Image (cartoon, rainbow, N blue to C red):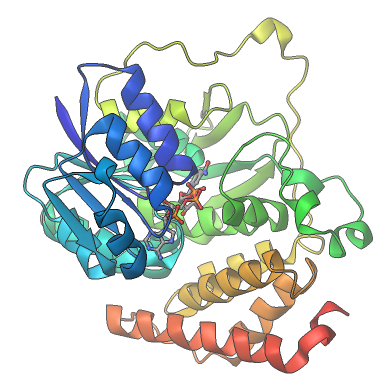
Length: 390
Ligand SMILES: NC(=O)c1ccc[n+]([C@@H]2O[C@H](COP(=O)([O-])OP(=O)(O)OC[C@H]3O[C@@H](n4cnc5c(N)ncnc54)[C@H](OP(=O)(O)O)[C@@H]3O)[C@@H](O)[C@H]2O)c1
C-alpha cells in the first residue's frame, strides 16, 4: 500500500484526494493530513482516515485541535516549520502538495530534500522558485507528478516521447466565467459572480485566478519549469468545453491531446497510482453528446493578467515571484471587497514596474522579492484606498 501524506487536506484538492483514496480500498494509506486553521474538517478527516501524523500551520488552532478526541495521532506538527518536519517523515511514499499559495514552497523543498516523490497540485511554489525546485528535484532524483489537470495532460502526452521532439505546448483554458463577456462588464464584477466558475468547482483563490486568467499565466510558468520549455513554446487557447486538458505539438506536426471529464479526481488518481492506471466510477466522456469543441485565442487586453504573466515568464529572475505575491495580495483584497475586480491587474502591474529584477536568483532572493512585493501591493492599495476601484 502506498503511504500518502496530504498537505492541505482540508482544501478542494485535499478533499478530492481523500475521496480518491476512499474509492480505492487497499491501494493507499493516509499517513498524514494537514490544514492551516480548519481544524473542524481536519478533525473529521482524522476520525475517518486515522493518520499517524497531523499538521496544523496556525499555532492557536493546533492547540485547540490537541484537545479534540477525534484528532488522536502519533504526532501533531505545528506551524510552517512543523509542516516541513512532517513532510520529511521517513514512512511517506508520496507527498500530495495541496496547500494554496506561496506557503507551499518551504514544505515542498523540505519534502524534496528528504527525497520524497511529490504529487504537485500547488502552482505558486513553482512559479516563484521553479529553477530552485526543479534543480533540487533533479539532484535528489525524485519524481514530481503534476496534479493540475493541464500539467497532468501535458505530462501524459509527453510520457513516452523524446523531449527533443517537442515543439509547442498548448495550454487550454476554460476561460472562466467571463471569456465572452465585454471588458466593461468584467471590471466591476462582485466576488459572487467571479466565484461562479462554469466548469470547475475549486478553492476561492484559484477560482478568482481563473476569472482574471492569471491561473493560465501561473500555469504558463509552471509548464516552463516542469517541461523545460521557453515562454515562446507555450501557447494559451480558450477551450470553453474543457474536455481537452492540454495538448502538445511535436516537430513533425503531430498534435497529441489528453481528454477526460472535468473532474479533478481523474488527474489526482493518476498522480497517486502512477505508473498504473486504476479503473474507477468517476464521470466519463460521452462523445455522442459532445456537439462541438471550440478554440479561441485569448484577448490580452481584456485579460491583462495574462500579458503580465507572459512578461514575467520572458524576464524570469525574481519577477515571477513578484507577480505571484502581488496577485495573492490583490486576490485576497478583492475577496475582502477592498478593491474591485478590474484593480487586480493594475496593482500587479504597478508592483512589477517598481521591482528591480534579479536574474538567476537564489532562494533567499526569491523569498525577499516575495515579501517586498506583498508589502508594496498592500502599501499601494492602502494609499490609493477606494481610488483603486476607479
Ligand atoms: N482546486 C482545484 O481544482 C485545483 C486545480 C489545480 C491546481 N490547484 C492548485 O492547488 C492548490 C490548492 O488549491 P485548492 O483549490 O485546493 O485550495 P483551497 O481549497 O483554498 O485549500 C488550500 C489548502 O491549503 C491550506 N493552507 C492555506 N494556507 C495555508 C498556510 N499558510 N499554511 C498551511 N496550509 C495552508 C488550507 O488549510 P485551511 O483549510 O485550514 O485553510 C487548505 O487545506 C493551489 O495552489 C491551486 O492553484 C487547484
